[in-house]
Length: 50
Image (cartoon, rainbow, N blue to C red; front, side, top):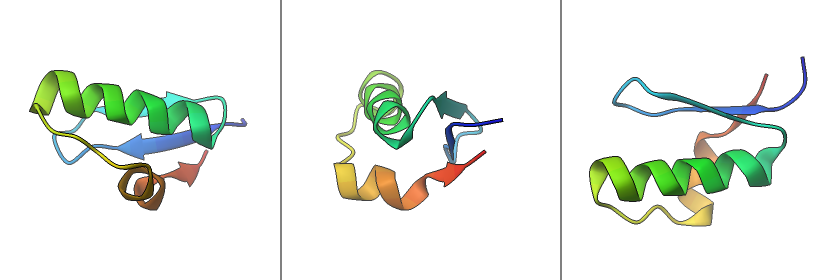
């Protein structure tokens, strides 16, 4: 299976077809659920391939 994943410390698993997609998903999740801004660098450090 292709794609990338980020596991948020809150337990939410975010998936995207590539690193850019999962980073955008993580940034959206961080804003809407945790009321915080997640930088590209922070999100990319949490990303791993499926």
